[in-house]
Image (tube, rainbow over all chains, first blue to last red; front, top):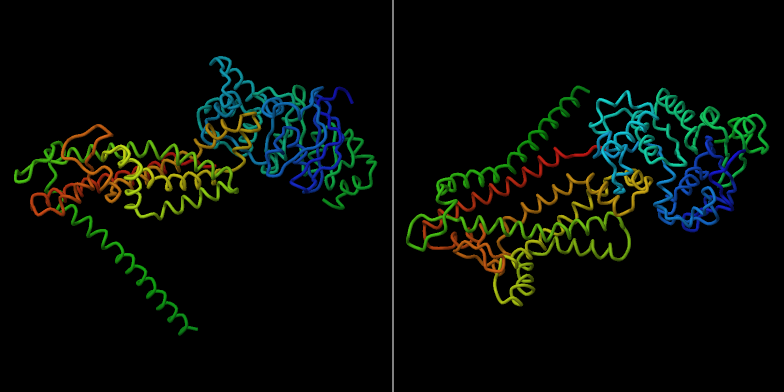
Length: 252
Length: 281
């Protein structure tokens, strides 16, 4: 499976006393797209939010076990540093409403008080927007509010904002669930192109989407990792009966 | 069927008329006040009234320049005191929501909101005037700031509560520390709401008389020292209107007019500010 970038060992996640992830053991390969799928409420999003330590900010959120980012123990790092190395895009596009498109892309630096020369900032913005195929669409309106864009464009702006920080891993939490089919196709296309330079972990509701974009797929059910493997193998020859039933639409 | 239709139509018209009538009725006092203020006040307003100090009894002319300056100083000082405190407490309430301290803070804010303004004056007298052994603009500002505080706390809390959580997550996911997220993302997003709260708070305290009676006290001189007694428009209205001199009555009307215009300006500014800086999520 090549190099691993994110590994979990006996990972448990809780909301107060309620256990939502049970004994998750998985190794996410570098420069690949990994999909996490499963029915609603199975813990997909929680797992994703463990990776960038957002889970512990939820009321009662608690993690037990180990997560490794390369060879360092992610849970012993400063969450702020973790979040700068692992970017995240959310279900609904959430550009900063007070900022222009340009400021949104560079927000990771500006909000953190990282000083950049004007040239360097321009370069980062241009590259991030080019990576998300947004540059040609917005290069003349960089100083307009990000919220003027269409939903699909806003989501690509959010991806650009995360990419501008040069993260090692990009987490996508159902990034197309609020978008129309055309914008969805556009984002999926983008994900396939992006994995050359950044490892992608995508939570998705849609089996089809996992099939289209992911090299590896994990199937979660009721907080347990049922199966994890190359997407093709998992889709054509699932080892677990529950995976097969989910894929054939028996539940979900 | 037809009978029924006619009846419904009639009741509808009747109700509409009633609502319209009550609307007009409730506007009448407001219009009368404005009409009276303008009629009586405008005659007293001239350049001298706005830029000169009061003359001793018996001499005609003179103005309320000291009171206008005093009111402005009182507003500035009390705003400087109430705004940081109020926004801080508002952020705390919006962020923490539950918990003992939040409960106490909310209770305290509610009680403060209902406290008669004269009581706040007495408290400022005890806290500031007595230890410093002098009436002062500072004491008046403390009383007004306490009055303003609950309004700012509430408006800040309400505004920040309306800001979607996704916005905060967006910043946190970029590795922005919590305090920077609040200062640079959440507060700017709530700017218009907080500003509206402050301006309405100012409009509310600008016309307060009771808390100033034994704090700012009033002064016939132009005073810029916050540790000395200071005049204010509502105090002038109170003193002049209860005097036996017709010339002072005229000036009280003039001062009322100036004060009302000031409050109106703050109210309008709040309205315009809300619209201009409103953030859509």
